[in-house]
Length: 185
Ligand code: URA
Ligand code: SF4
Image (cartoon, rainbow, N blue to C red; front, side, top):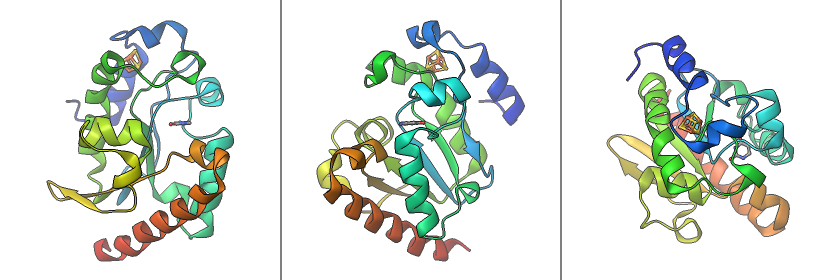
């Protein structure tokens, strides 16, 4: 556990704890408000994120940003990070050893931000944070409280690009998040 953001980021920049270090251009640390009430957790960097070092800047991210903006949830008010900080080849799902190697960094980020609400974007985030027994199709859209943090699992933004119906559900889930935020002002 690092007490400062600088130490944490510096250690990730040099990290070679898993094989994903071999092909990265940039680590994708995380971005946003370091005192955010709401944290968003994705899966891992894609090609655009690897190039820029910033999460959710590609096509899926732009769609997510539009939904957030539509609800008056400014990206800058939130903190956004991923399960793995280095891009998996061909955007495959992070393997168990990779996710496990990287999770301490995310836990450290959660400890520093101290969010009240965590939005889990897709199956990889859900299973690695809350447990393998959860499935995204049945868990999405429902609040799960653990150790004082409210978790909202929802679709990964990339899934919205493939299925229009999921856009509506994603929107509804974010609306729930917006509502719940009022409890923590
Ligand atoms: N998909 C993710 O899960 N995270 C990103 O940062 C970009 C795309
Ligand atoms: Fe280290 Fe995480 Fe990158 Fe693996 S994905 S090399 S654990 S920073």
